[in-house]
Length: 215
Image 1 (cartoon, helix red, strand yellow):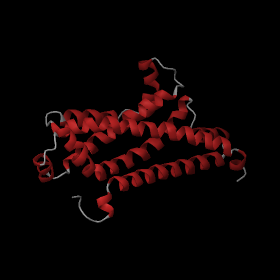
Image 2 (image 1 turned 30 degrees about the vertical axis):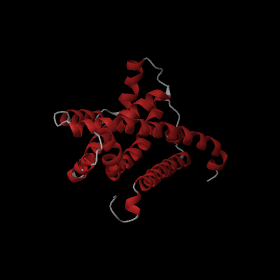
Image 3 (image 1 turned 45 degrees about the vertical axis):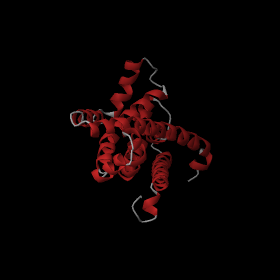
Image 4 (image 1 turned 30 degrees about the horizontal axis):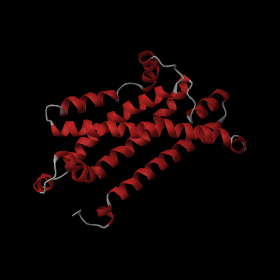
């Protein structure tokens, strides 16, 4: 393969753009999903509304969403913000149920003990419930990360440059090397995201590394 060495700079630039378009929505989606998941878990009446409502967002075809957002937001169709917002919506759709289920996995006895020790609701959430829910949330975040890396590639159809551009370039010229490089780069990027999430999970759950429950 001689194409890759000659276009390495381009591939790296597209990889950086792809990382931004897939990674920023992952963080934003998590930050929004945490309070929504908590509300769904805290108030039973909101659970079906939030879980079903956010879940339906994932049924919107990505290409349609990429095209609709500029009309709704008044942005240009090539503005990367459209992709970031769309991917944030998809991330929220995947993570709200995960956050709610993760918080629901915390034993009631643990919450009651924390309350008896004087933990108020906010402190209990941050210091007890959320740390114990990290493994479940992490699993959902890993799925969302792989999904984001994949769906971002579709944005090349509206002209937003990222690794998906290699696919269209290869298809348009009936040239396989850019397609292969694009596929491999996407897989490697998804693996990097997965590794970062796993590493962050290990740091956030030291009791699991020690093989014992938190005290």
